[in-house]
Length: 227
Image (cartoon, rainbow, N blue to C red):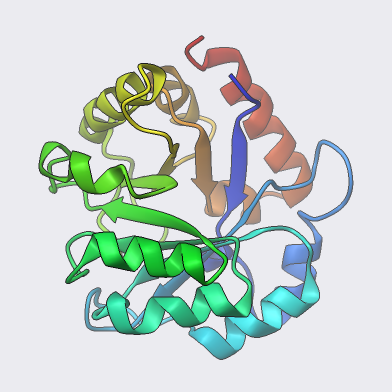
């Protein structure tokens, strides 16, 4: 397996100095993040409001770390393409919000981005397996979407295990990502279940040195991932 990916979530960063916060995980070497995770919330699909396309466009100009946009919004079929056209590396939409997730995946790829599909903790995986054949990333939510700092929901790891088996047997070709409550206490069980990419918010930006926190999480995950 490839090295585990660590994607710091700027939802836990200091928005007053966002450029500096991203730069802290963008230095060359082991402390460099693989992706930067950007949560876009619209106060409709989730009960919180964060940032939108203009801020993402500014972030894209400020760093060369791939930007992983997680759109927790209504009507992603209409709005998601703009993030791909702006240059986001991966654009993830929620299956619970997308009207035509297969066409949306095709449109995201045509616009130059990887296509990601996210599922809430209470959403079963099995009804969406055919849809996932059109996607590059599966984002399993291990908290209810909308707010950072929540506790990890371990029950979702069964969905991770199912996805991992399907990837390993060639039925799916995608990155298995997890988001919510990932820290030094939970990353090992997520790694054992078969996660490829770990979104971490407060575990990175609550640390004295965010870059070192990235390196430590990656090392922890690498030891426990399934082979």
